[in-house]
Length: 84
Image (cartoon, rainbow, N blue to C red; front, side, top):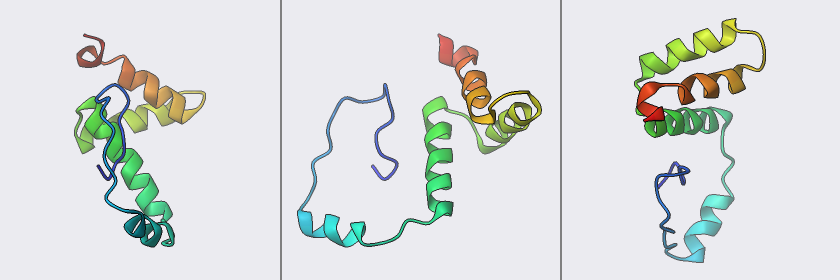
């Protein structure tokens, strides 16, 4: 739930408890580290890969010409377990 919705995995809408808890969490500033960590975890869980595999894909994407993020997503989408 903390990571939010992952496209294609569910169509259920989570029920919110109350507005008082949402207000207290909205006042907190979200760090850049937390944002990057959550995005990385979304990728790992969505594509079912380990930390080491993700790092290898990032290294390949950095070496290639073009936008690193776009190339990384292309590499992840081309995996056979994702295609099937």
